[in-house]
Length: 368
Ligand code: PEP
Ligand code: MN
Image (cartoon, rainbow, N blue to C red; front, side, top):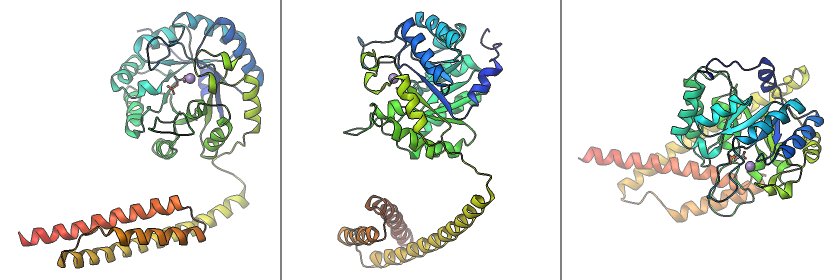
């Protein structure tokens, strides 16, 4: 098959490995002129490595703008040859993959609404079997880390060589400052599981507005992400999709210049020594904390035995509220945030209850 024999141009793989890797372009391809204008402006920044554009747009309801479809691939090709930027397009099925690659698209991405569907991801994986076509996988719309990891595994299973991840935030119920809540712990866990894999932040879909882009982008860089995908448009307010979050290529340039780029490692001996010392102290403290927590759990078990023998409930709401309130007050004085204290004590309390449950259960077993 055509795709199987397709070899990605080495210069694209080189771009893929560029750090930071900045991808930008409109949410949707709207016209030849829009794409060419955006691509030329982005290329002239000297910082953007790849042009993105949505060709087939998955929309919540029918009747909304669903992208220009296949015809836009020609515009993208022209924009790429004029600007010199490689291109990146969203695909949701095998036909999209075939059409995009046939028209010379360099890099693909799987959108958040597609990552949730294992059938679609498998279909895309099957058509890419044994290729080196670079492909980025956005997180699924729902905060299910296994679904995200599952999509990566489907691609790995068919030996796709160049896989990356895009963090675009998660749908949540209720009011939020974000369009899609970042839930940073999920991409952090993905980075732990796939330390070598390219991880990019898409602040545009996380924020849903322009004014928070910089802070979210900076946060991702501070966490060691490898790049950004930011939506840009020559006339953002008039964009046919995601108008509120798109920015002018010139404004992107300003933002990129104002971000503080960090690397994960340093070769400066003085810094490395200082870090090693601080880490050793942290390791010691962690060990002490673990010992103390284990001791606390042993005491909880003792209390469990007492409650069991006196037929008292495990959960003592008033006592628990007192502990929590007292600890939050103490924590504040020590410079710890109430939210952290609450999360920490919740975890400790849950474990404590589970230990006491085991104690009661053991009693039941004995008396059977
Ligand atoms: C997009 O990048 O324009 C897009 C549709 O993103 P997501 O899949 O993150 O919603
Ligand atoms: Mn968009």
